[in-house]
Length: 110
Image 1 (tube, rainbow, N blue to C red):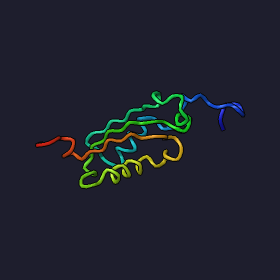
Image 2: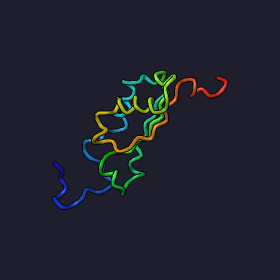
Image 3: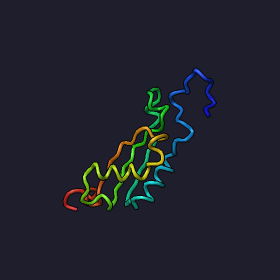
């Protein structure tokens, strides 16, 4: 139950109470994908004032994992979304994903 009086809206910059922290998102992805590198940034403050800010947080995720070898971009993204599935219906509004295999992260000629 919300503390916001009936007929009013919560401030757009306030994510819902059930929204995960960047650390929780990081732990979920780390547990599912055993990444070699993982960065999770909460960019919710950049989206203050738009409707999605009330629905959940916005995260930018950069992950390098051997699980991504030979997978398409959509398949890689599905693996990340599966890792945070608990929060997708409520809590996470958007994920901006960069998903690389170790070879891709090493760059050409590595």
